Length: 432
Image (cartoon, rainbow, N blue to C red):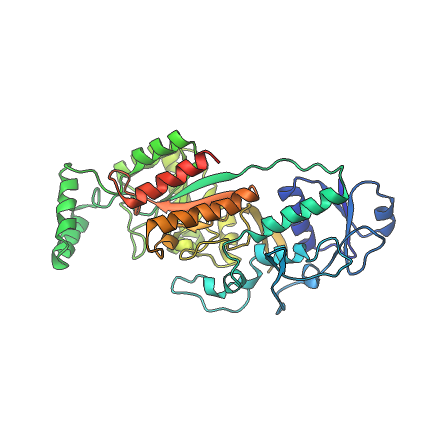
C-alpha cells in the first residue's frame, strides 16, 4: 500500500489520487493528514504538500485540488522531457510538475465550465480547448505523465509492483440510419425520388430503385459484412443504434418496423448493442428513458452504455441526465471534427462533477478518432498514417484506442477506399 500525506483531504484530491494510483497504476493507497502516521509508515509513501517533511518522494501541490468551484486558473505550458505539462513544481520535487492537479484539470473538463461560445449543436468548440491551443490534443498526456511517475516511483521504491496493463482497440459503430433506401415508407420514398430528380442525382435515383427492387444491396446494410470482419480480426465492436422518433436531426426508419427490430436483435447476438441518444434526448430525461426502454425491449437485456447524437455534451448536465436515465457508461467524450484526446487521456474514468464536488457513477470511455475528423485529409493514405500515429501513442501507454465509424461511410459491400482504411485498422490492431 502507498501512503499519501497531505495537509487537507478534499473530494477532488481523493478522486484524482484514486484514479491515478488505484485505477491507472493498480496500487492501493491511503491518504492521511497525520504526520506521525506518515513517519511511522514503513512502505512506499509520498507527500503532496507545499513543503516536504523529510527527504521523501515529494510533489509540491498546486491549489487547484484544495479549492471549490471554478476560478480563473493561470496556466503556462512547459515541457517535461518533450511532453507538454503545466503547474510546475520545484527542484526539491521528485517530479517537476503537479501531475495530480494538471490531470484533474483535464479529466474533469474544468475548462468546459468556464465561459465559452457553443457551436450550432450546443457543443464545446475544440478551438477553445487548452490542448488544441497548445498543440497537444493528439497526445494522451495524462497517461504519459503517469507512466513517467511510475518509473520515478519504481526507482525510489524498488519493492513496488505495478500490474501489467494491456492495449485495447475498440471499434464504435454509429447507426443513425439503418438503411439508405429500404423500409422508409411510401411517402419518404416518393419524397426522396422527387429530390433526386430535382437535384439531377440520377445515379442515386438508379441506385435507389435497384435496391428497392432487390437487384442491389442497400449501401448502408453492412451488418453481416462488419460482423464477419470483427470475428476474423477479433477486435471488439460496440453498435450504438438510434431509437428516436423521426425529427429534423433523427431520420432513422421507424422503430416499430419489424425489420428494424429484427436487425437490432440480430446484431446484438454477435456484438454489444447500446443506445445512440437522439438529438432531443440530449437534454430531455423522459425522451432518453423512452429510447432506452425501446432498445431493452428489442434485445431483452440491460442497456447501460450510451452515446450522444453528434457528440453533444453539456458538462456536467449531460452526465447527470445519463445517470438519471439508468446508464453507467458513456462513449461521447471526443471531438467530431478533430482527432485527439478531449480529456487528455486514453484511459476510462469516472466523471467528477465540479458543480457538486463529487464523483458520479458513470464511466467515461473517451474516443480519439471519429471518421468525420478524417475528412480533412487529402487522401485516405494520409488518414491511415494518422490513425497509425495515434495508435502508437496509445500502445506506448497501454491505453484504450477507441475509434468511431458508421455504416453511413463504410460501404463494406463494395470495394472502396473507406473499406480499405477500416480493414487496415482491424489488421493493424489484431496483431497489436
